[in-house]
Image (cartoon, rainbow, N blue to C red):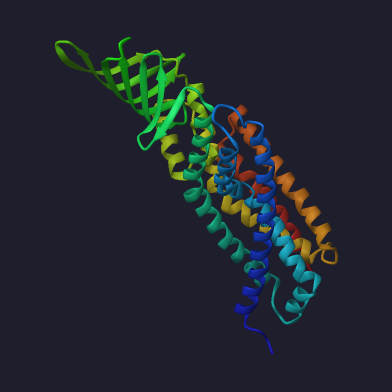
Length: 358
């Protein structure tokens, strides 16, 4: 009696899902351990203590999970399908009339579920938590950026106090308020700027409204642009900026548009954008690559041998991807091509290997 294909699909999918989740648990656990060890070296800087190091490490779990997902998809599929191969279950399925195509489809369907979960984790959950983690770390270690509240960052620059609502990539800040005091701690001026860009060791403020205060009253003036010399450099603020590859896709798209409209360099952000957009493709390619190993030359091998080969493939994919990314930035290769070429190359290899399965 033939089992309904839906039951078999679920069985194969469950093997891929459980294997991938197990591998994710191991990889993220190791990643967190080494990350925490690295943070221990920074304990003692400013107000950065053990509790801050633990909080920072835990807040980065979604980002670390997202980063290792493609490799986890490959190793998890190898492990899950390998277990079925070791118990001859895949052979029995094929003998019962279930085609190789249906088995591949079931594995890819499970991979697609994982991709959706990973995308939600990386695009919705990770960015705010990563921003909070970086803020926690940088504010605890920094001596100049002294406070972060619901209204943004506060810093001191001589007799001035500066409030910055949001710090953006590309040396940009927005919603800036500068309160200048005299030696007697009396407020002398209050300046608001909608945005500011750091160029040539100074800030260029845009859409400014400045109120000067003296014994006779308050005088308010407006300017379109003005330079602002401050000890608060872009390098100092960069410690609280979330990296481009952690920004959500829609934030990257908005920032790329801004850079291009203003004639500024956008290649690193385009690369991060396309890398995130193509993550589903690379993850499904990794699942597909596991198929030849459980039906091909390694079908009678142990789990350790399959995992070893999978690790080598994962490392190769990672190195090729990183190399192309650097070449893209150095030689101006199209970011879309750089982000997709490794996935398509490994897809061709996987399809070629599957076509030889008998």
